[in-house]
Image (cartoon, rainbow, N blue to C red; front, side, top):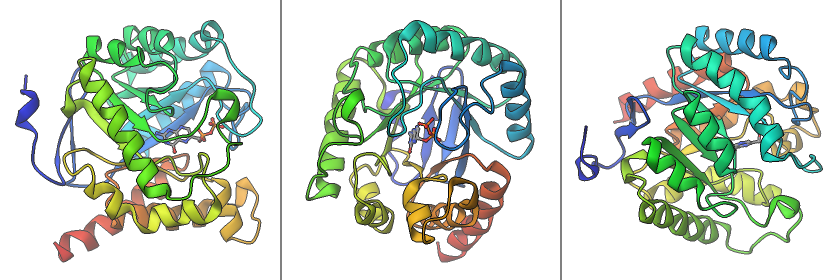
Length: 294
Ligand code: HH2
């Protein structure tokens, strides 16, 4: 076991998960999205059936995913609330089947401590919290107990107001300050700093210009957390469609890959995507360019 202070290098390190560490910084990691929901904005209903979810997960691993992120509650504007029991029912059988079958770590995309606990018991190694611990701070206790990785994403408001609050003026300061508070709270509750990962939350309570601006200034965001991996999720999001003149979800692949390339060039260490093969190729090329630049 590494000590917490062992990972203090800037721009690269070992992300400490429940049963392994994942090197970050040497190449960009790809997190494949597996939504076991009936209503996710881009793939709602497609993988709601556990057998189809497992098949899709296996394909993503084959395509080169480094992490699988399993979510049982959609966060899209207008999605319906899911109680912890229903979310657990959706997520746990899939996590359990995956954890025994795939070689990559499984993450659970949840804001609920109870769901996180059940998923970690079932074999998940990372908790991905889009509320950055604001909804249920006890989620950090659960992650700490399991020694799990913990992604803290920036968002605003409550479950009901995630996408409806007026955007803040200085988004970069807000994102950094909020995640500083989240990481401090996680550490206070016993999560090793080496287990943390931060995410500016593209598409959550931000204007179109702020989403584009966050990508453009991702290096400034990353500089605020030089010892932590940075995760970015832009996949098929509305701002990509807007940049493409109103392209629907199914026509955002190339635009998404442009954002993946931009994010990786500007310092993202993990990209969260639906289209794994395309992202793996994209970051492979970008990483080669970055390596020459040094
Ligand atoms: N985006 C979504 C969900 N979880 N987690 C992190 N860390 N970062 C993100 O940007 C992020 C996330 C939304 O995308 P998706 O899962 O495709 O949609 P839905 O919430 O409708 O299931």
